[in-house]
Length: 67
Image (tube, rainbow, N blue to C red; front, side, top):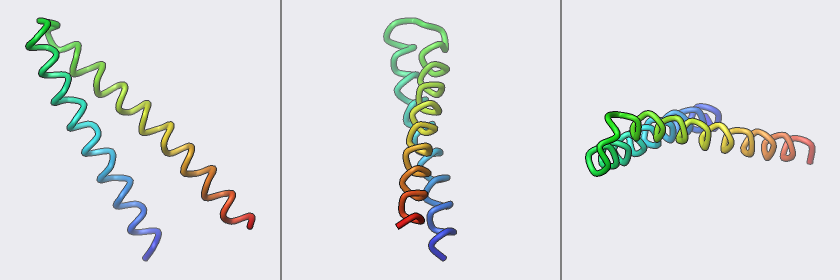
């Protein structure tokens, strides 16, 4: 059950992060007239941050298994 909850949490985190980054990017596009670049870069940055977070979580999980 714990693995399923973790998997659902990771998926929900990614969905919300991408949605939020897209919303912020749209506002930046409208404000500065970037023509969609703000949304694209926002989502790209969101994926990079999410991946870094996943690496940190994986390292923490491996440390917990060793103890």
